[in-house]
Image 1 (cartoon, one colour):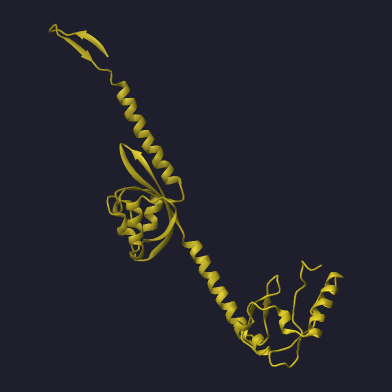
Image 2: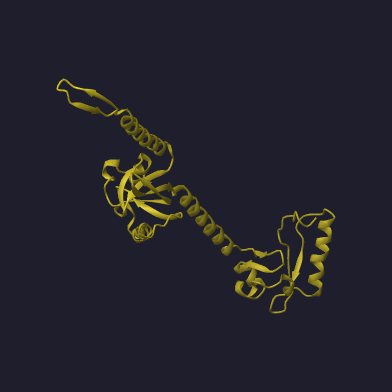
Length: 248
């Protein structure tokens, strides 16, 4: 600042405001950079304080199916699917920041599954919660499709007219469909965990050993087996097996 004498003879002190304008401009530019980063991300971003939405980006507003003006200033739990509201409220009270799943409540009443993670920042002397929200819809749809495919596959296996027998690397039974269990005179539950050699007599046990030797010689293809069901009557089968890449 500088000092000068006015016409009245009084001395006045002038304050240089350049620094103040520069600081204010820097703050505005910092806020603009934060907003630009927020809008450029593919995730929804929320800034909240004590459970109230202070700011959000357009991506999050789109997940809500609402304009940003309808979200800002409102309680966050009001935009959460009812079954997740208690979890969200607890996360806000406890300051939880690790990722967890929940569902947003869209304007049309449908839900949007998401994964969120949070952190706390000091902005303007206030502690605010910054939450990143990732749309989880595609992953949930893939998992649902996989579950439905598994159900269809199991239904086919359970109703097959051929015996299907699965064993683990230790030759223990991990699964047998009803037809296979019926042929062996027991149930699938009774077969689970049992070595497949338990269903063979001495002659039957010698057959797989010869088949293994053939595979080691590079001879692949289906081969006959002989089992002895629980009622004692011998049973022969020709399982359709693919060559074991680890056997040769």
